[in-house]
Length: 106
Figure: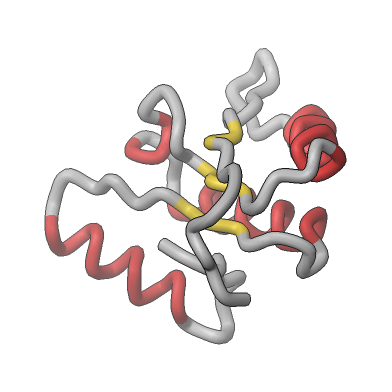
């Protein structure tokens, strides 16, 4: 999906359970609310610094889940604020591999 960078792209907070696991049901409610409000795209891991502390597996899970929820209606973007260039390059490459759940933008 093409990202036009026009309109509203909220940074969606990442929800966790009391046991520090991703809370996908609550995350999904937030995505549903954003989509129902008519947002132009979704930015994952873009608030409160969680993008730099999420594991690759957690990021992949969030992207896959959000892509399924968005169902092609809006672009899904993942934040990759790694502190080392090699980490950013690896994440960018992984985000573009067809066997991953690629976000629409990085």
